[in-house]
Length: 125
Image (cartoon, rainbow, N blue to C red; front, top):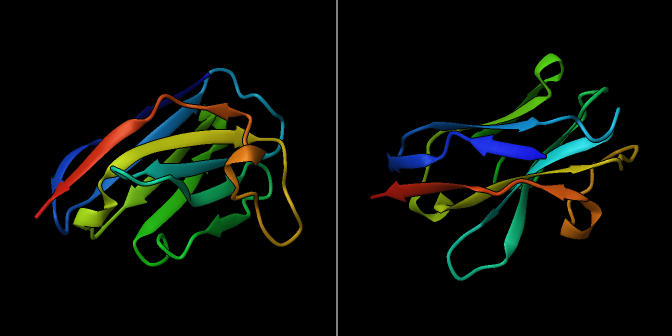
């Protein structure tokens, strides 16, 4: 079971930190990812992190503003979001997979087996 928290309401330029804890962790290795679904749009990949090696893979939307990190001891993954924009408004989901690749991590929805319920982020202008 994956449980997200940390969503909320913030003004443009503000910051939020999302958390996702696995109860329990589904895989000894593998990766955790953040996806988001904005109103009227498909769910899209944001960033992923490998549990053991710490490899990170990010979508361009995340580069420079969002940072994914993990605390293995707590089975928790974080998404620090800075300089938020109105277009970041979405429901943010975390997901788990046992798949990792040499030079990148999975970014397609169908490669993730477990999903959280989502946490809403609203950015106002």
